[in-house]
Image (tube, rainbow, N blue to C red):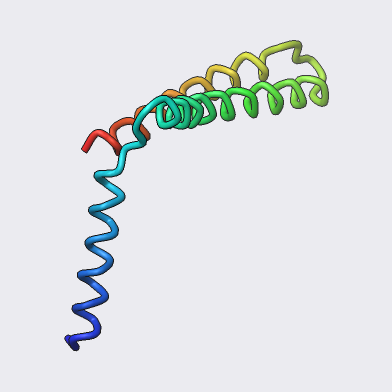
Length: 91
């Protein structure tokens, strides 16, 4: 490899390591982290509720079956999102 490739690889490695170690400090950092966790959980839940309600209104014979099912799926996806977010910054 050329010197330029090595320099680029080293610079990228330093940036990745810096981002991995970065943690927001103080109350602002706590609010940013809390807001991110909240969005990672709430957005799939609301999308599931909206899509389930839309399906229930357009398919005959269903009352709330799709809504409840997709809300539960949204909760599961939200929990998975939060878990991945927290374990990524725990390294």
